[in-house]
Amino acid sequence: MVALTHIEAKIREFLKELESPLVLHLSAHLQQGKMLRSKLALSIAGESEECVRLCAILEMIQSASLLHDDVIDEATTRRSKPSINALFGDKNAIMLGDVLYSKAFSELTSFYEKYPTIPRIVANAVTTLAIGEMEDVELSCAFNAEEAKYLSMIEHKTAALIEATAYSAAFLAGKSAEEAQGFRLYGRNLGIAFQIIDDVLDIVSDSKTLGKPALSDFKEGKTTLPYLYLHSLLSAKEKERLENAFKKEIDAAEQAWILEQLKKSGAITKSVDVAKHLGKIGIEAIANQSCDKLIQIMREMIERDF
Ligand code: FPP
Ligand code: MG
Image 1 (cartoon, protein in one colour):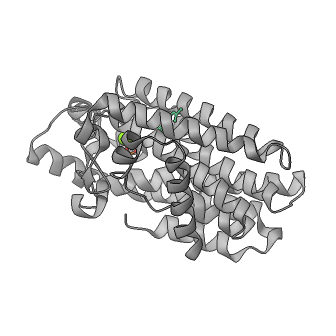
Image 2 (cartoon, rainbow, N blue to C red):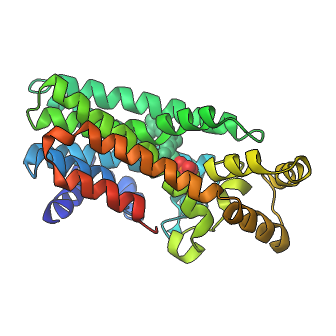
């Protein structure tokens, strides 16, 4: 996709405008990810200058949120490379996040005149994702066995920005308010399913493929969907054993036991089935738009292995 390189160039252009050697030095160490949000927006609105600009803004917000998230999670790696907080410390990582996020917001105002809804959609999404991260921190304090709480948290933390991407790209594409709601629903379901698959990959993938240590969610205190389902299927004694391993550096034998239970109990399959079900709902929401690319994005996202 040629447009993805245009988006990266746009981000560099925005950062150069800040005339700060410090920002350029730190941001040179940022790793661009899969650019899911950009691929989604481009598939809906096409490769126009406006869409490239919107994508650059969304990717900068995404990068800012991950910079802050790595500080909160005390993560030392991001996409197989040392994280910015590991390289330059928490203070620099937080401030670089703030720079990316505030520059993205000032560029977002350029849409106001022609597409007044877009800045509001994106700004609201950032509030929601920050609230989602707070909920994630809160849920990580103790073993959480409530599926609804977990799903609501990931809808806020992860799906909000993906939903906003699809919703705002629909307005950019000239869709009616009613049609845009279909894209919004697609984006929300893509986002929730994306996080569920991420959570499954944390369990079933090796650390080399993931670019971070495997099985790190549970150790970090995240009772993701597979752990939640496993918990509901275990005997009282086994439940206690699982709860005891929560948020701890456990030995290889205990890790192997949890992994075996996750596979044997069907907890992983059940989680993937939930993601597939959400994928179907998302695709149904845009069924009248004959947009094959969005069907492909959903399918590839669910079938991915990193
Ligand atoms: C990754 O979660 C984190 C997010 C999806 C969102 C984080 C959001 C914030 C820190 C709020 C940012 C606020 C502003 C104003 C920019 P994860 O830890 O489950 O995923 P990971 O394994 O990739 O780290
Ligand atoms: Mg994290």
